[in-house]
View 1 (cartoon, one colour):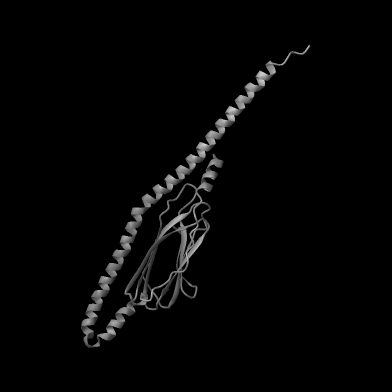
View 2 (cartoon, helix red, strand yellow):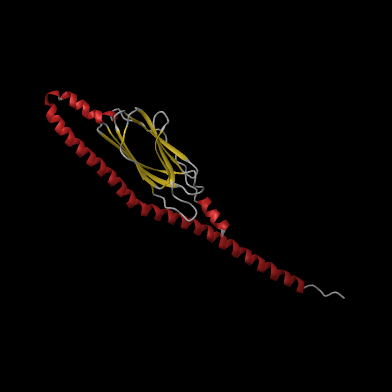
Length: 235
């Protein structure tokens, strides 16, 4: 049985996905709110990193969820870490299947690194959903400079706009996780179906091989008996 399980694991080896640094559009810094929602497959004992340029004064929100279910022999927990441009750790999650960070105030401009580590898993690949949200307050500051003659009215509108923007941001984040929960069952069902199909093929081949060996052994047994009965007795 152990040999059969090991063969099924080898048959289920996934395709490696290579991910590179993300490219930023020219109008990125002129958008008040930027959100990134993506998924990727993290291979066993593998580490994947993503990079996102963020301007000083912006606000950052980060969360992830592992869609792949745990098995009896392996957990679906991973290590996630967000690093500043100078390499210092901003946020770190140790062996957890999901996490949601607080809203950070970014004080240093540069490329922020989002890394995911699956070094604890020997055979289990993991599909991960990631959410990265960025708010650019400097967009509102530029609008404020153009409206110096209506500063008082602008302050009132800015506060209302910030409240609406924060509400929309949290709604987008909540919808992202609702889609994640809706996709978890389907992802697990497809993974189990693929595993059962591979194990069924291996089991059928094993049964056919054993049946052929038994037939061959019986044929050899009867052949040897017939050959001995046809020999003349010795004096």
